[in-house]
Length: 449
Image 1: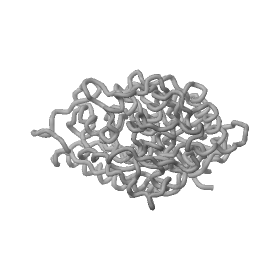
Image 2: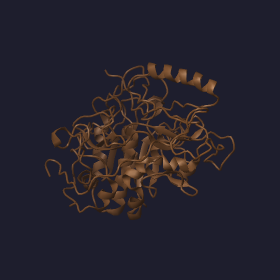
Image 3: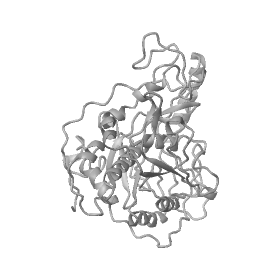
Image 4: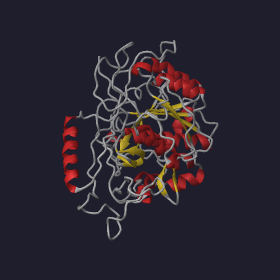
């Protein structure tokens, strides 16, 4: 049986000196691509609940204050809010962060949305994603984001997907990050599977692919919230962030068009997607891009017939009918895979790492940075390719100033948490923003309409 390995995103490079919190906002290139200001002039997703099945959300982060609802940990340990990892916090911020102060901090695509945090694992490290899906449905979620995945499967997921669709709830999941076949649970019929593209609208080389892929979205060098190496912000790459953006867009559509079914929401996202230039033979769906690249503004404004209730979603497979969530196993991120894989009832806990690696790089004096860099390089070489590549970042002491830095770099260190002196701070602004989009209006009807 295949061992379970969940999606991982790039290394989170934090503790870089000198940048202010508004540079974090400037570094969110995906907001420029989405045209977030235009999108939010139509709706911010108010009164819509997005469930986040992940490794917990830090509801004390200033960019997420007031956005996080009471959640659920199937293991009864309260890990829906504090699990020691920042992946869930970053996903929540991609969706619903409102920033803080005057244009500072992370701004999510749908800041009117409320996040319902659900921990991914149960007692004994078992996979509790199917159980989490049903709990989310019963507690008001209209969209469920699962930026998690594994090679092995859990037969209970088919019943959970069917339950969600019967109750008009859309499930969005990430395809995976090793350039191979689409992972569980994104490969379960009825789930909207999402891959990642870079700033040039090209498929990310590690984005998993196959006939299940329905949409792609920005997922490379994404700045988001999270406690990474003591900093308040993180930088990562992976299909996790892309999935969170699609979930946010789905919530926006649900807020503006509340009478649409989950399948009809997926239909608007699909019909408004940008046709990928790299699609094989121009035929859609493409195994890498699906029906195209997410365009939230067009999804909210284009004249798109509602279509059939199922939309482009595959019909949910018939499960065991028991509704049981026993079977697969997950553990906290940061350890090495071992033991039987997901889907083995009663198996020993198996590592399920989320879609972001949480290996921080805290830069101090040049000598210390060199030593840390050597250690990090050794870790990178040893890690499997399922971990996405870390990115080289400027701004080290004695090195060149990061992109967009003012004259006289570096400035005094500032903190997003109330400007506390000496606190570590995200300090790298990614390269210039995304290129202008081509003219809108492309319609890509899915098969069987």
